[in-house]
Amino acid sequence: MKKRVIKAISDEIAEDFVLEKPKDLSFGHYATPLAFSLAKIHKKSPMIIADEVCERFVDSDIFESTTAIKGFINFKVSDTFLDTVATDALKDEENFAKASHDASILLEYVSANPTGPLHIGHARGAVFGDSLYRIGKHLGYKIESEYYVNDAGNQIDLLGLSLFLSGQEQFSDVKVEWPEEFYRGEYINDLAQEAEKEFGKEIFLDKENMSKLALWGKDKMLELISQNLSDANITFDNYVSEKSLYTKWDATLQKLQKSGALYEKDGKQWLRSSEVGDEKDRVAVREDGRPTYLAGDIIYHDNKYERGYDHYINIWGADHHGYIARVKAAIHFLGHDEKKLEVLLAQMVSLLKGGEPYKMSKRAGNFILMSDVVDEIGSDALRFIFLSKKSDTHLEFDVDMFKQQDSSNPIFYVQYAHARINQIFVNSGKKPEDVFDVQLEALDEDSKNLLFTSLLLPEVLEDAFSSRALQKLPEYLKSLAALYHQFYNKHKIVGVENEDSLLKVSAMAAVSLRTGLKLMGIEAKYKM
RNA sequence: GUCCUCGUAGCUCAGCUGGAUAGAGCACUCGAUUCCUAAUCGAGAGGUCACGCGUUCGAAUCGCGUCGAGGACACCA
Picture 1: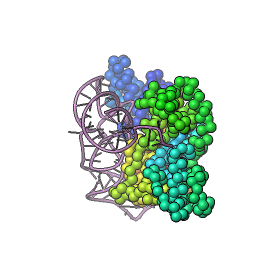
Picture 2: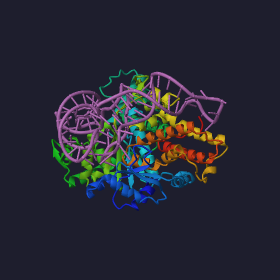
Picture 3: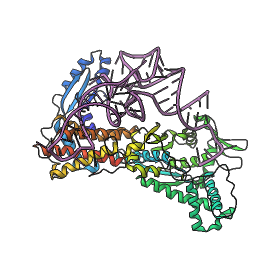
Picture 4: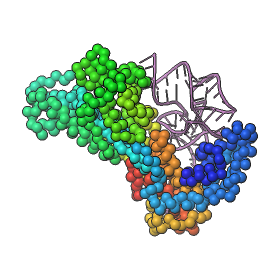
């Protein structure tokens, strides 16, 4: 809708202009402060300029009226225009609010270590990434999602050690000395029991078996993680193994050496990251020749860039922010454009329950498990709350709020509006497609505002995606639902003279509600 | 100490690429149901946009500074 409006205006106005929403819908549907900037150039009063501009739109089909108020030029779209846009949307719901961006994007997110179940902090990045993916796809981007699996290095060794020790403790008489660092949490004990069933208790006798346990445990954990994810409606296009990338380490190392990115000091290989924005140089290869964790990310990002996407997005936990500069530095030294990589940070989450801090799971080793929260409030509510807030700010919420079956629970409120519309169709004995071709008539202001707002979804999606501010979508859905509830309370629909028109408006609202929900990874309810 | 993310109504947060009278939800008070789901709606009250200076016709929004909160500063991942 906005695109058509912009076109109509630029047909009459040569200058670039900003199209925005008026503070108050009673001014109009769209507005531009163009007259202020023109006033500066032409040394004329903005009010007079605005009046002159308005006159050019007197004969427009798209605009019912164009008025100048305090220098702002306000456009009110016509009923026929809204009707046309709505009819198109209704007849082709699948493609409603789609766009034709064609840039390719590689989106990496979650990438949690496969050494334990996902916790609530992971969940935020996971939900955000998944919805960004859904919206991007909808807008036409060639977007792929990827999970980078840290299946090499210390963490995995530690997992093997933890399993081994837990097994010894449970299945042998050996007295176990736990080192300072290991994975605690009962899930380790459970996993050790599973290992005992699969391999027998002998496996815990020989230290040689630790790496076998590590690999086996890693796969089990990965299964668990992908189960946690799919319980929240999240799937990935690709899983990339860190370990498998290491076959390319020598080649990558040579590339870095060639570009002069490395130097030797104290027997270690250092990356000159401080030359390109990092606070200090970083060790890439230790004295004993083992690469550091950074090496994995260097190979991985080289690999990403070699696959040739237009843009790369990583969603990381906020605690990794210090890591951005060194990865970008490495990308730079590898001869790639580091500006194509965008790192979004998912900030911490504090959970409350009934005003008290949410109980940590002993099973997980004093983390709040994602699966516990999903079990408690459901995937829909979890997704809605996480998407309702900017991803890069701290978030605190109380799970009890999302168990309420009334308007204090936003997801419930939105679902209820959608179910209500469906129920109205049931009561009218008609199906939405019966009213697609109805010509809207005698629309009062409320119906018109509802229809107009329903048709804003495409621009909301564009805005939300391009600014990576997904909270705009749930915000919009809440306001659309509110508008529908108001409309419903004020107007009888079934049995009135212009029933078909009101039904068509309702159908359009439903399309926007369920399309928006779908992009949030939430299924719309038809009956409640 | 350096670097992130912030500071907006009692609470949780929008608004921030400068624009019209600073918003929503919750909580609170009052009201609406012979009629499509009252699981809803309406009305009311609630503000030094942390503070100061600057840029501008115009600042919650941009810049600088101060204060305050949380986080990150590995040869761990």
